[in-house]
Length: 225
Image 1 (cartoon, rainbow, N blue to C red):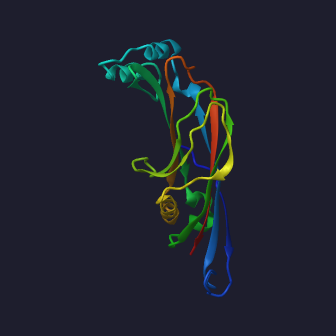
Image 2: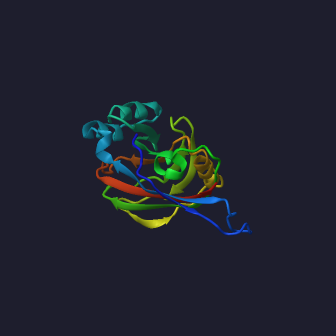
Image 3: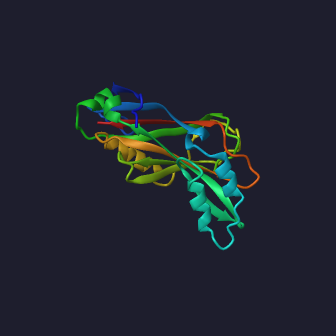
């Protein structure tokens, strides 16, 4: 894992303690973690063309497990198989993660243990480049613990057609998505991960995946202490 270069600024608020304003002794910390880039690179899965084509030609009638066994042998990582309409489907399972360490990024949080109250301003995404020649399934965005032992959903990017891109737009958060992000920021002494997961599903007669897809997340929030 590698840390992200994050940007943050803090401003001392001196307004009176009235509804919607900070108390005179409160500090607002504006947090912008910058662009968090995820790259789906088809070549990184080491797909063996001959073995992959053999998987797609398999008739799995009455023996669906044969698809997964053969598919795992067709790639160096991340492949699985399923029996769909009596034929094997090759699946490239994608799981990418990026570390967020707020104490390393935000000077106001680096050498303190003070409690803060966080609020999410926006979580946006964009697909900046896409040369993948196959469609993706929806891209799930999640938050995970440092050890990736607990992964919780935040939202989902819609499925993308081959070579499809998207301009910057808000991610539709799950009912608990904002609260999960806020809790992670309030526990700033512990780094966390943002995770992007999806799947490329290939059936007989379709091309094997080539190319790359570049997706960027950006989280903006503020906290009070």
